[in-house]
Length: 245
Length: 137
Image 1: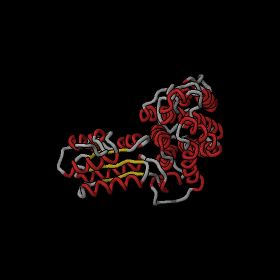
Image 2 (image 1 turned 90 degrees about the horizontal axis):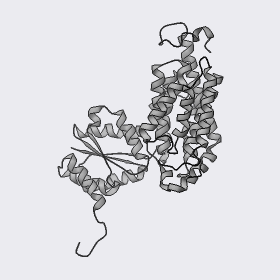
Image 3 (image 1 turned 30 degrees about the vertical axis):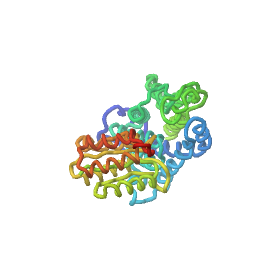
Image 4 (image 1 turned 30 degrees about the horizontal axis):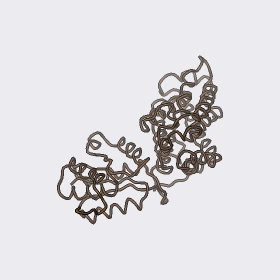
């Protein structure tokens, strides 16, 4: 935990000041708690996510995402040392937030499969790179989310309204940006999580324009987008990680 | 020599297509990224990036043609291209050609010494090549 005094210089670039190790440890703690929390929530909801996907996709979203996140969580929590697999090498060390997010992204890319594995995987890799540039834990949510959204838009060529993950993630980032002066980061991320949830629910009447669901055309209308739902879970877990770390 | 890279959801499909190319064009370098660990279906940008790097090395400065099956294979290729440097990326041509027929025709065109444009054109012609025997065909 960073003490209040060390937070005061949070706006300056990371230099060799007294608060830096604490801030780095807190950022790493948020990243770990975020991933572990999301893994647990997706595991719990895997059946529901798969059912949502069966309605408009290929019915594997929950199972696939759960498989990849279970692998990420296992490495994060037991710190196993599997040197034969460099993809996970950073997950077993009490590393910095950037390394944790980047390694998790690579693991997701290699285990989840399908569009969601590519999209979430690279989103985490890019989030890790963004967080590396700015080690401030209070700016981690915004930096990570902005990088993730950019990555998903670039790779998927989707825009909000296409009935995708972005329909949850973009409102979340907007809510983060719209923070009130002096509002604690935990409160801002909580508002972002609420916005993500509303965004996900608002995908029901949308016509899918990307991925397998777009093959259904008009029949995709009337269903929640499973990617938006798992993305809303992602932001809810970020809020909980920030609050508890 | 121009190299061929196959990106698909199933390791069996990728190795099967590779075997078909080898039969038609034994000396053409073919790399593949198919399926996920544990024999599961899917594509991984990381595996595609490794396949591209192996193929670029084997091609010795020449270009690559990349063929893909469907869905997320295209995303995985985009991720992999992102990881390459500009010079390497400029040597890679991703084609919409049919996966099986395009691979065999690309292999034959490579073996015949075609340019990369010629190889891509040969592979993409597979989409318009009749498969059923016809009278007078």
